[in-house]
Amino acid sequence: MSPLEQEPGARPVSLIDLADQYSRKRALLAAIVALVFLAVQLVGRPVFTGQRAASPGVSLQYWAINVVALLLVLATGGGLFNGARVRALVNDDVALQHRRSALGAGFWLAMSVAMALYILPLGRTFTAREAVYLIVTPSVFFALLTFSFLELRAHGV
Image 1 (tube, helix red, strand yellow):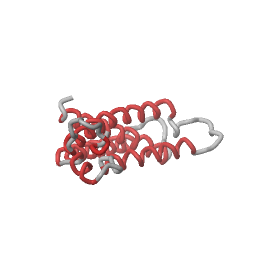
Image 2 (cartoon, rainbow, N blue to C red; image 1 turned 90 degrees about the vertical axis):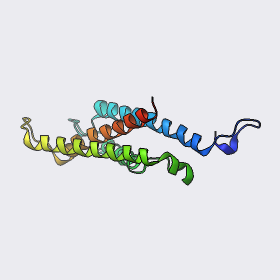
Image 3 (cartoon, rainbow, N blue to C red; image 1 turned 30 degrees about the horizontal axis):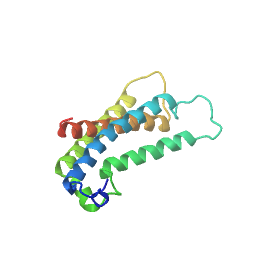
Image 4 (cartoon, rainbow, N blue to C red; image 1 turned 180 degrees about the vertical axis):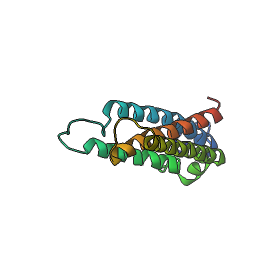
């Protein structure tokens, strides 16, 4: 409930309290989204299907759209529909540092997976699309989960 939609006689909710609620929800939602994203990838694996789907590339396009959306959330901190003042409070210096750390963790995982695919002989070669999928999927998952962990820890959860 926004501060403007409060019931008469209710204690007013400050913007700081509202931002704190949004921040806690965002941290929990980031963990849930990361786990759902990984579960869908483990079940669906749009790149490694041995047979062509009725609509080739549709599941891969959904994967790409999903990844772009998750990266936008990581890059901006989400909450783009919140007011500017609330968004500024939610994305405080601590949250910005957590996002930087999460993006750094995702980057280093991406580099590690990329180098492992390049160096290690796995008995098969990967197409460029398969390699991108193998690099990006765990990196985005790990960055989201890292951000969630850091935020939840900061909130004492």
